[in-house]
Length: 444
Image 1 (cartoon, rainbow, N blue to C red):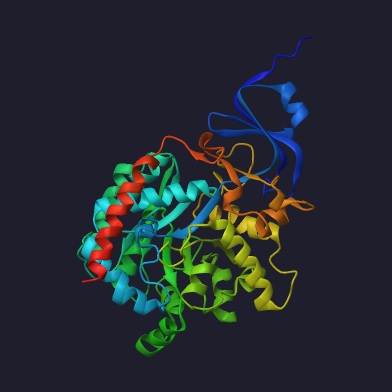
Image 2 (cartoon, rainbow, N blue to C red; image 1 turned 135 degrees about the horizontal axis):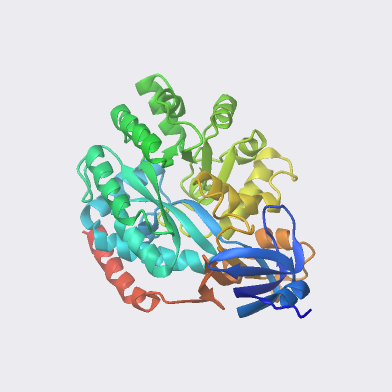
C-alpha cells in the first residue's frame, strides 16, 4: 500500500536538537510544525518519509533550541542604554533614571524603546519577554509588530508618573489594557508592583486579590541590594520578603526579581511556597548589587529563570550572555566547578522562565503540542569549532551573534540573521531623535 505523506507547514532538519524536556541532545533529527505547533521530533530520514512540508529548512551545522525567555526586563528603557553608567542603584534611579523618565516618558517613548528592544531580543534568540514598565499598551503594540510573545507587567507604585497618579490609578489603567489585549494569543499579563520600598501594604493587598481573581502572576523586585534589606528592617522590623509573605504574596504565582541578598531561611521559604526567582546576573554585577545565590536556590528546589533587566542597567538584552555569566558566577561563588552545568543554564533560560510565567504548558521546551517558539544557533563557524559538546558550546562558546533563525508560534521572525516584517528600517532615525532629546536634558 502506498504511503501518503502527511501535510505540515514546516520541517526543520538540524544537526542537533536540544528539547530541554527531556534533557537530551538529539543528533540529525527533525522538528515538524503545523498550525504554529510542534507536531513531532523524530530522525530526519524518518521525517522526510512521513511528512510533506510546505517549507523545509536544513540546518546542517546548527543546534535547535526552544526560544529563549527573558524573565525580567524593562523593554522601553533601551532608549536609556548607557545614560548613567557606573553608579550605585539608588543614585542611578533617583538622580538619573527617574528624572529622565519624568521629562520624557510617554506612550511614544515606550513604543519606540520597546521596538528597539524587540529587534535586539529577537535577533538574540529571545522569543518571549516579561516586561515591567509604564504605558504597557505601547509595549504590547511593539511586541505585536515584531511577532514576539510578551508577558506585560501591570506596574504599580505609589508616586505619580506621566502614566498614572497613584497605585490604584496604575492598576486601573493596566487592567483596562489587559481587557483590550487579553484575547491576543501571544500576549499575557502579570501584576507588577515595582518593589516593596515603592508599594504600600494596602496596594499589595489589592494586588493579591486581583492575582487570585484573574489568575495573574505577581512580578516584583525583591532583595536587590543590601541597603534595601537593611532599611526595611529598620523601618518595618522585618525583611521585604518576610513582609510579602505576611501579606500572602509568596506562592506559585510570585516571581521575585533579583533575590541577591537571601539567607538560607529565606531560600527555604521561597522553595516551600513554590515562588520563582528571575536571576539577572549582569545587572546585579553592573550595579554592584552582589551575587545572587542561584546555585543554592536551584539545589533547594526554587525555580530560577533568567532575565536581562533593562538595557539601561545591563546594557544588553542578551540571554546568551546571562546564561554564561550565571553558570560562571555559580561556579566561582560556590567553589564547585560542577554546579550549574550548561544544560541547567539553558533550562533556566527556557522552561524555568515559562514555568514562572504560568506558560510551561505552552512554551519553554520542544515538546509535541507546544507552540513552535524556536531558536537556531549556528555552531559551524571557526570560532565555535571543534565542537565536542553542543550544549556546552551553546552556553560557553556561542553568543547571540550565532543565532541564525527564530520562529514564534511557527512564524519565522529572523531568517539568516535578518528580521522579518518589522519596523527596523525606521528605528535608526527614531533612536537618533530620542538620543538627542535625552542628551539635551542631561546637559542642561
